[in-house]
Image 1 (spheres, one colour):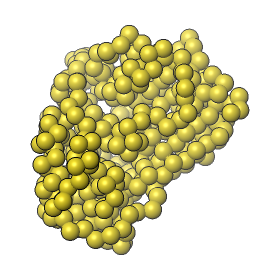
Image 2 (cartoon, rainbow, N blue to C red):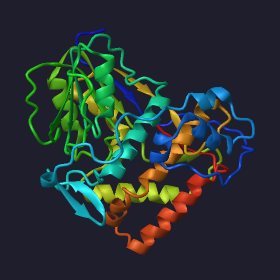
Image 3 (spheres, one colour):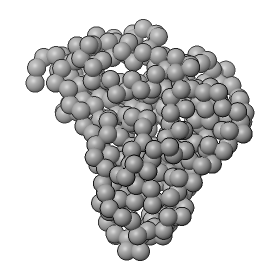
Length: 353
């Protein structure tokens, strides 16, 4: 290992698994909160509806209920506002346009479960051994930071976000702060051994600013890890072209761009990190099916969770579609069609992570 800060990244698309599916194309997907609360037997029964011969190991490995209660964990009336029945951060209006209410917190916690499956139960892929100081940018509910602090009891873990919606840490080595990591100065009195970012596509005007700050505040030999998906759909047979799903993803990027956020820049993360000074870059590409159509057990499981996560994202991203110029009736029609496509496991589609 050199003495320069390092970087590890998980994103971009790999090859897609192929093969016909004999499963029911109209199988229902559970809502995130239902899955989080469900016992393994109930989850196993749901998966069994898709597969006439469910694999026992596939069913039993499903994550159990989370300790965080559903809904608000730390609500502050002074830094939130209501719009169309959803609640948004008001610490820096316009800097982040997804909700921060209980429904969104459940979605974020479920997305954490998806990442756990994609990463084979690991919180980080970077070869960190005994970090002293770690930072998670855009910590959301704080579930990753809390888990990381428990796994590394001698590490001081800091999570920053525009919303104070984090659960109370179960250990004393984890703290959360209100901060805009892009526009505000980093005032940490220590050097960072590890910086973690996840699902940051709609968050920054220019993520290069964040990468430069991370480099300048990192200890020699430190690591930065970006875990993210690219906002594109692929298929094994080209059937995704012209789909409602493809249009939905494209319009979300258009809406985000109208607010100064270029979500396609995640593809250039490697380039931007090199510009910031990072070395020894590792780019890991993982295909994530949009439903459990794949024969491979791991990819089938990823598809189940990714499909459910995508369904849960339809509601919070409606605002982005409005930014793209769609009328409410057009948004409703598009979201309805995307939902139908996500429920159809005859469509062998996948996204890149």
